[in-house]
Amino acid sequence: MSKLNECVQRIEEIKVAFHEDTANASLNSRAVEELKVKYLGRKGLVTALMETLKEVSKEDKPAAGKIINELRKGIEEKLETLRAAAEEGALDESLAAQRLDVTLPVAAMQSKGSLHPVTLMRRIILDAFRSLGFTVYDGPEIDLDFYNFGALNFKDDHPARDMQDTFFIGDRSKTILRTHTSNIQIHAMMHERPPLRVVAPGRTYRCDSDITHTPMFHQVEGFIVDENIDMGDMKGVIDQLLKAVFGQDLSTRLRPSFFPFVEPGAEFDLQCVSCRGKGCRICKNTGWLELGGLGMIHPNVFEAVGYDSEIYTGFAFGFGLDRIAMLRYGLSDLRQLFEGNQQFLGQFPTHP
Ligand code: PHE
Image (cartoon, rainbow, N blue to C red; front, top):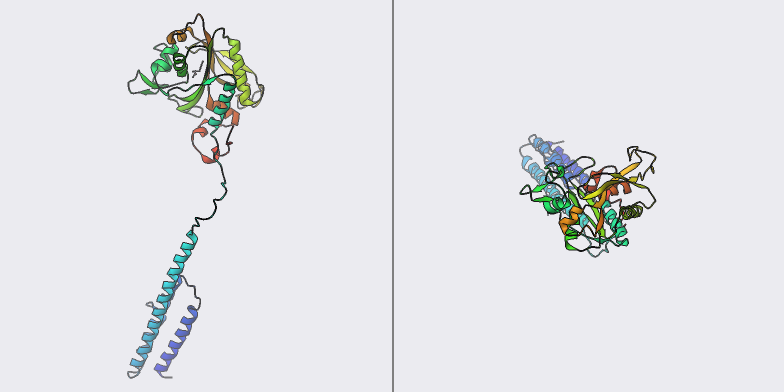
């Protein structure tokens, strides 16, 4: 066989191979690129043909060169068409995947929002107080020393005024972030005349942070001022409140304690909600849970707001809302309440 015939035969083989390689209509861009390397690349089949051309006789060379060039051109054109088609296909595919049918009806909501445990607890507690005839009051979180301390009978050197506990704003002595909701006692008493039954929830701030303390936390304050109010009234209100929150009869106890704005003062404990007083991990084996402080309003407080302490008596109490929420919902770490974790918060109901 002449070299020319050999060359022609090789060309036919390449054509058949190329035909087979491109028979699959939907080649993607990468497959097209690979074919380009296989046929036209530096070590490609068509390039190799050019080597064969050297051996073809001089007179046959132009004819052989021509058919090789035609083959190369044919392959180039076909690959270019395939490349364009592949690109268009990819575009169509991604457009189809991203297609947004704005006329489709909205899918039913998978999840509804829920209430934060502190919000739930606040609503339950305020409802309980409203049913006992209390009015809900609000007061400033940024306040003057006078309302947070001075009028509440804190002496100038009381340790609670110390830098370690109180966040001062600007001038060290005047403006602070309230350290408790008891400032609302003063605001409310200065605005109203007795008889008064007030409950006041709010954020409070102390320079303190560990597993059981956060620099911002929530308290609920409550107080009554009227003629002939005594400690029995106070115990009755506290018992009612706890029954509303925990839905069961649990005992409470008072332990004498000191707060400058009450006399006598006490801390109140609740029988452990978990072991009912037997002793467990939650109550640290004491059978009791500390909830807050209370007492009969000090005559000096009445004097500061212009009430006659010969006529009026009253009691006040304050407790941590976050702590009650933790006990009520069985939470182990106070900080969970402030991290805003959607998975954690989503477990709580949408209403009390
Ligand atoms: N304000 C006190 C505290 O934050 C609690 C308290 C309120 C005590 C009312 C007695 C009466 O610790």
